[in-house]
Image (cartoon, rainbow, N blue to C red; front, side):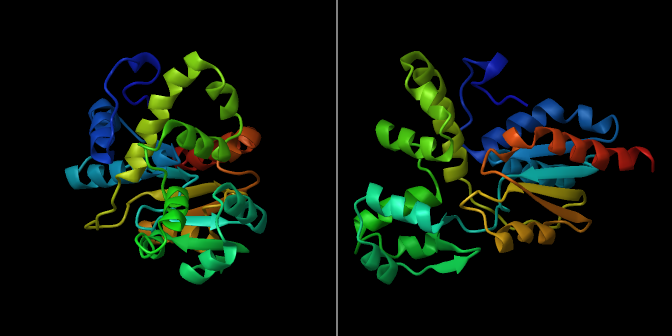
Length: 263
């Protein structure tokens, strides 16, 4: 699915919120989902879109997806969290010129999967007392779409170094930066709302074990979002883990969906 402003829809006005994006997708698929079995695959913000879309389908009484693949994201009711391995935390401290001892004494954190994890609610508590610490950590919890350009680009490059080539080219930067800001805006402005029921589809959760902001307990929370089966599959790599596991992921999808054909 191409959201407005991308691919063949280049030039259309961006969706800046989750409801706008979900409405756009639903309009395009509502006729197709009545024609037979289908599945969703959503990566990153696409996982949140797929989840919200499935709940919209339940509410409207449409034909539910037989399966949903959630990729590279925790459930929407998990609080935004900044997590750091020891190496990444030291780099973070240096880049933002922070005092490590003061930060650790000031902001509550937990250690999960050998990573220091800071919940956004705890980061918010130091907004007035330590604005420098708040600014640095809040960006790691959820990337604001309106960050100054150089800072926004730096944060995006930390997620994926391959983006550096894009930003070094002025024409590509002017093309892709608004798209990335729009994606960031959808996530930044998203707020989970309680649902009247759980999902009615089997789900598979795929993620990269090297992704900093995902912890095992948070990713396993997807199990609580469906009344059917949930399978969680960790793979090597970070947020863009699928780039090095493409054949394996395709095999997982094909095998999973083939089980419905035999029923």
